[in-house]
Length: 166
Image 1 (cartoon, one colour):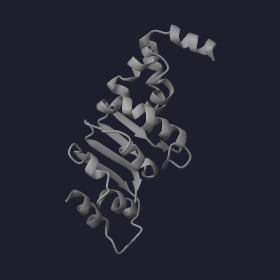
Image 2: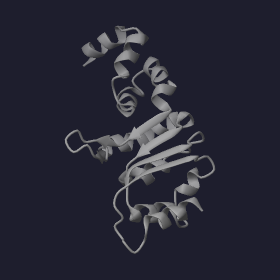
Image 3: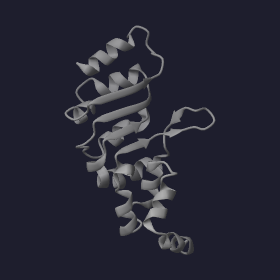
Image 4: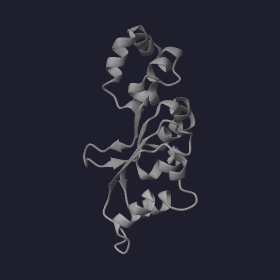
């Protein structure tokens, strides 16, 4: 492995960035934060830290799914706290939302995108006394849910989202 790392280290910054630009930003962050000072400096570029997608799109079904716990754990414990001041947009899936939102403060966060949510998720996470929405409310300017069909027909989706906005 050191042999491969030596070859990567010999590349100029511009070449490394061109390679990284072909990867998902969370893959770049997960793979290169903490490797060395040079990579730490490169991965802190706004291109990789401004908008972070913490969900994976399944190539077969074209649906979003959760990232492995190992990636979410490292992201919440090590990566997000190091770059939180640069993050303007988070793209999340329901399973890890609370862990990610509560892992650190996001002073520049103004866009929150959910890959798939349902009424139960919205009611649990964005209404009530422990909702993380209070955590981001002062700076959140865009809320872009991709809503799955409503599970409870007694609660219309429009009324659920009105509870969030109000």
